[in-house]
Image 1 (cartoon, rainbow, N blue to C red):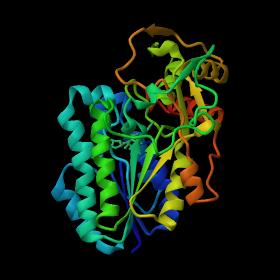
Image 2 (image 1 turned 135 degrees about the vertical axis):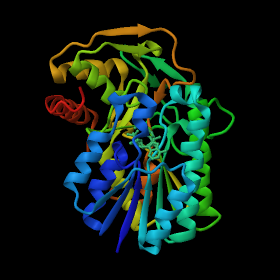
Image 3 (image 1 turned 30 degrees about the vertical axis):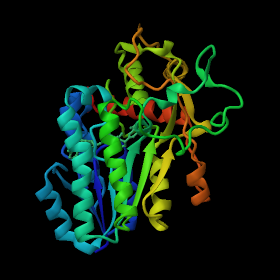
Image 4 (image 1 turned 120 degrees about the vertical axis):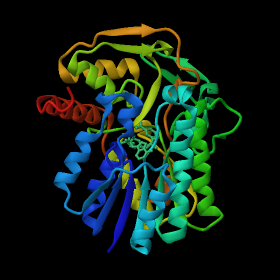
Length: 359
Ligand SMILES: NC(=O)c1ccc[n+]([C@@H]2O[C@H](COP(=O)([O-])OP(=O)(O)OC[C@H]3O[C@@H](n4cnc5c(N)ncnc54)[C@H](O)[C@@H]3O)[C@@H](O)[C@H]2O)c1
């Protein structure tokens, strides 16, 4: 029975992966214990999404298991053995702020949880393709050393800089910068996943996300920038811009476009490879620009305040260069741009509000 294991399956990337891969597999095993509610409160619970998946996808089986539980994870892989052809590992503690007050739990989930999955996969399904969702935070605050120009609504990289036309590539070094506690646990997992490819020869791949978004995101104050912003506009909740005058720039990749990357990779894996995965030059926005766009889409005005002190190490400008992936896998490109992402977020939040499952 051709099987895929997807961790964090009720989260943004996990649930998109379940829906995308369900038609190509006999069985999709989803692992998610709704730790998102534990990290960010019940408004961020992914329970609604778990219920949708269970109801709508016949070959989906949900397991409420903690990836930190080595024995449980081992048993899942033991039970399904070499039927497991694909592992997509998206379960994570995803916030800097949460990690700084809970470093042990952050490391247990992000680093040790990843090791548990790698080891179980090596023992019971060594031929499987193993995909890991890393983060651009592995580059620490090094992007903040780039020469930026301040424009009216955003920071922009100086014209002529090697990263200016396409964004930041995987050549940027990852050590000796300020990562934050979250960034450090992601680095540990990122390197481990690479090593299981390079050292053990497993088909592992690392995807370093910029900002990832989509209607399945349970946006929370501490994670999910666009989803949370749209939520505040639609539910008329106050929103605080934190630092950088609101001119910080993020690229945004729709969860569907990321999962399409996974599909290209799983069909022709390159062991231990690392790819930046973001919206790049075609899909990026500053905080000020996002507020304006969100207000235009919804016809509502955001109650916004400004906090002068930026988060420690927070990127002022991040745009991913995806040339490496596009060269290895011709055919892939960003298909859903920033405006459509925000439109979809708005529609899904309105639907969820009407179904009263968010509020
Ligand atoms: N969303 C982004 O902007 C973004 C950007 C860069 C990287 N990433 C990375 O992509 C991955 C997926 O992100 P997402 O946005 O889908 O996050 P998400 O929070 O929506 O999904 C993660 C899921 O993992 C589950 N989970 C957490 N700890 C768990 C545990 N111990 N055991 C089982 N399940 C657990 C949560 O309940 C949640 O449903 C993460 O590794 C994240 O660091 C996300």
